[in-house]
Structures are given as structure tokens and as C-alpha cells.
Image (cartoon, rainbow, N blue to C red):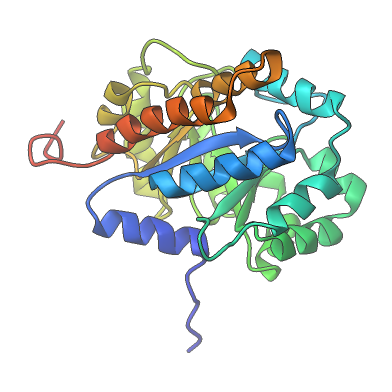
Length: 282
């Protein structure tokens, strides 16, 4: 009987669960305002104790990204950022220090490079998995096998509008964790999480053993606290990416921006910890 070794992402969620909390995954845009800043920010986030980091590959026609992340993509592309630059930069990181990185990348970019070639480069650079928002999850069987052959995970997205029968097919090609979109629409900061999310997460829990991570609209500690006992992780994007706008639009010191991001991350991390009152029935 063969024994499957847990992936880096699976091992991370296992560790976090043993610590009695949810995983925290911030999103950063590669190359905004430049790759050196991106690499420094990844190091800062790692030092702050985040569990995984999602790295967005800028694309001119993003599928589900709101205005904040779209603007970050535009800034990076205007500076002629290339896929080669992203892989070269990520490869420079000390991956014994930096936690698992998950690429958010359009299939159009993967196709242009060549799926096998792209995945080899992603693995060699140090990525642990991919999220491919424009690849239909229930049509990703062949690609998911190719991803796993490179010891990477293919994280699949499930939205509130995904028909239940499609969800079950999508889960068959998912690995690492399931990205649960909290609302129908694009990424961005929102005032509150939708009530149906609770039922969606409970239903998904009955259909898969994969960790469930919630993203889109998570921006405040109380939103994280509301997910205790329902989700295994939270993903935060626009609230962090917005801080980087200041570096692109003014001469503000990068360390000041990193300090603000660090304080925000520390508050959000504290909200991921389960306590006796919050971990009971809700």
C-alpha cells in the first residue's frame, strides 16, 4: 500500500489546525510597484507569522478581481513586468524561511507558456500550488493530474452561484484547499459577510475533507471571528494591496507602508485564534 506524502499546503493546514486556529493567507500582486518590493513584502509577511501567501500574476483581463487589484495589475504591467521576472524573483527567496506560496494565475498565461513548462517553472521557483480562476473546475481533470505530477496543488474556487452538482465535480480535481468565494462578484472590501455563507460552508464540509478557506471581502477581524468553527482559513487581498498604492503614487517610505500592513496582519492573525467561547456551536 502506497503512502501519499502531504503537500506543503496540506501540511500547513494540518499544523494550523493542531494549533487551534484558522490559517491566514494574504494576497500580494507580483511586481507592484516592483519585484524587489514584492519580495521584501513577502519576507515581511512571513516574519509576521502568516501561514501561506497568494501571489497574483498580473493579467490585462482579470476574471474576478475588483478595482483595487485590477489597478495593481495595471501598475505592474505598465512597468513591463514579465512572467520570467516573477519566477526569477520568487526563486531568489529563502524558501526555508518563506511559507507556502500559491500562484493566482490566468490559464491564458499558462497556455501561452505551455502547461507543463509553466508548472515546471512554478515548482522550480518555489511555488506550492496554483489557483487558476478562468479554468472551469469541472473541466480541469487532465490539468489537475499534470499539476500533481509536479508535486503542486490545484486549488479550486467555489462560488455561491456554483450549482451543487458542479461543485461535486469540481471537488474531484481540487487539492491543497478549497477557495470558498464568500459573495457573488469581484474581490474587494465589504462591510459584512453574507448570511448564506454559513450554510454553504457546512454543506461543503460534508462533501470534502479538504480545508476550506474563505476569500473575497474579508477585511476586518470581526469578519474573521465570524468564520470560527466554519472555515479552516481566510484570504485577504484588497485591504493589503490598497496600501501598496501609496508606494506607486508618492515618495512615502516603504517601511512605513510595511509597518501599517504588519499591524493590520497582526490584528487579523489574532482573530484567527479559537477560544472556548467562539469554538462552540454558533
